[in-house]
Length: 350
Image (cartoon, rainbow, N blue to C red):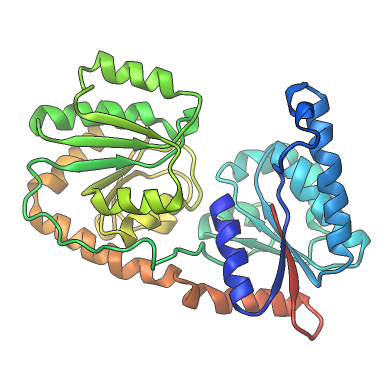
């Protein structure tokens, strides 16, 4: 979400808009406040609220990047209410993959804020369906993929006897990287020259590294830690196959970035993923928490060169619709529907 926010701010600036980018995780001031539990939350919230209030008084539109759980209550809801109090239209861009669970539990507290938003935008038909189940209308505006950065600049391998695999999710329980590692162990048994890169950071790193050791794959698996956008683009281009083992998902940019980079995608069929790609057309989809099914899908790709080429070509064509040129008219239509005439000056949050 942070990458989408920064990218959108740059693109809007390029369209002649003046953009205030408001961080929800700005550095603590004073720095020592970040080391004291309880104090650090207040030290971050008060400047955030103050910045929102000032910005809402000078911009024409607030675009809120929203997520589930505490992120909604602490950051999205205050932005919506401040916009309403200051008479500034608010476009809520909701992106949480756990929306179904969140709305089921918290709709009573979420609905009053949503009713004060001028428009509710979601990036996928999946979230459109989730909100629709609660009688809440949405407008679908897809994520933006930078096709100048994420692209395929190398010829695909003629054979995949030594496939290069990539996992590009944070090392957190909902992304179930352990399933990807266990699937890779099965692939490695068939293709000893296979290699796996795990790109991301998170609290499960030590646990996952231990799993690699237990499976005897230390020579074939590398953990990169956190990677910036340029580094990720290089990793995608170097990969033959990208694994997405997530148990909860909305519209994962990693899937689109991999497709744009010429990698074949093998993903779990959870959440919004089946709305994003078609099984056996633009990607291969498997059940979650099933290492054997994921390994079998990878082995289909390595064993069937025609399938790999077809998926790669279809993915490259499909992802073109997520370029700014395709997304811009849909987003600008939303802005025009809530704005007064004039050049928009926008506050983008977080």
